[in-house]
Length: 266
Image 1 (tube, helix red, strand yellow):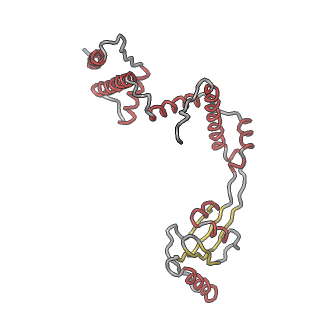
Image 2 (cartoon, rainbow, N blue to C red):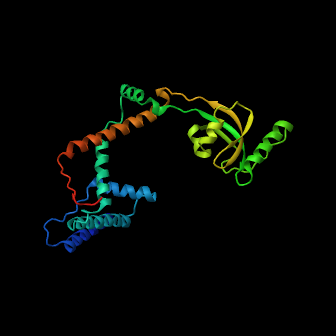
Image 3 (cartoon, one colour):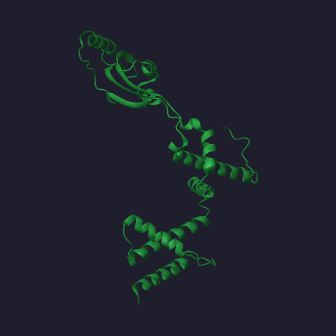
């Protein structure tokens, strides 16, 4: 007899005996494994391992599936799913995914253009700033040291030597938000209107004092649709999916009644 036939004969016997062992008193305990399910199980195994499973491994894969299905059904009989927040959240996610899949993923050009016009501010590219700096740690008389280093440089051409800075010395095309995040609001407001290619300072940050050379400012701009079409399409689909879920919930919510203990102390 073909080994693979023996394999599935063994699986059949195993399922039969598991069936009897778990709930002999109930009439129907069939576990039907469809061709699609089998293909999915074997494909998932092959994707993880990198090769097709052997006959023995097929037995193990199906046995594991059967065991999981049996335990799942027994857990439902015991109503173990009723108060489990993780299970509830997972099931809610699954129905959310099902509703999202009903949204076509190929919006028309007109739909994209209308969406882009309504949400143009979301795609605005902010101004960027490129600069270098010498840092003076606030732990060691930063203001006095920075002022002297700057004056000596301007007067005598002395090289400015500061302290090491953990983010580096040169910053290329950083947005205002990035600079504020790294150095603070006060620092950005001090350098945003500096003359280009001239050392100036010192300017205070959250970390100490800085002598700054502003090298370039690139103005912000609104890109045309064709430059951001993939992002616009993704945002359009996300919004459409969220809208579909909201409409679905609103449609069925009236069928439910929410009851909360009026005496509960929040």
